[in-house]
Length: 89
Image 1 (tube, rainbow, N blue to C red):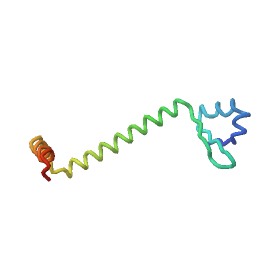
Image 2: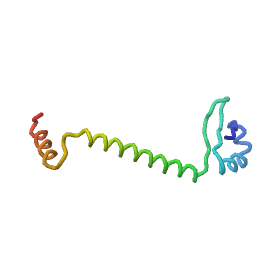
Image 3: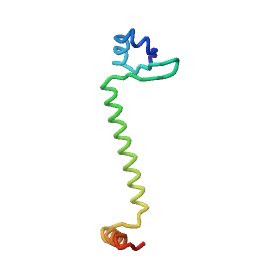
Image 4: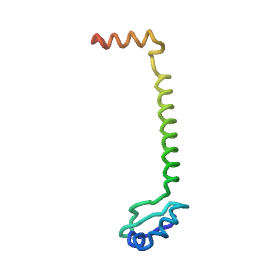
């Protein structure tokens, strides 16, 4: 990953954005990481992958919850809701 200071990025913005079209670019401020510039296409791919991973995690969590649930079936669920609605534990 190519690194530029914020000052360099201001002075060489054309070069920075050309580089960011092909790979992430790290910007530093006072020798510390400050920002990363990536292309819009790379950003969209990252966001899509993040959503896929979140869906996988939520799906796995739902499967685990279902496998540990004692309320399998509509009747048990409805009965449990009625008990809760009536203030019964």
